[in-house]
Image (spheres, rainbow, N blue to C red):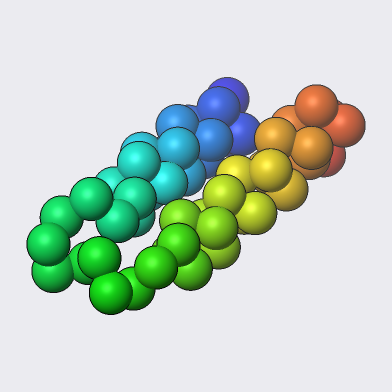
Length: 51
């Protein structure tokens, strides 16, 4: 249950970090890729049954 909630929150953060707004275009893809890596790790942990 906690893993599912954590996964949903991280996916929402991933969508929110996507550089589509004018003030965040200079950031590049660093925020998106950092949160994306965290999402992948959480998915692996949920599938493995650790979380």
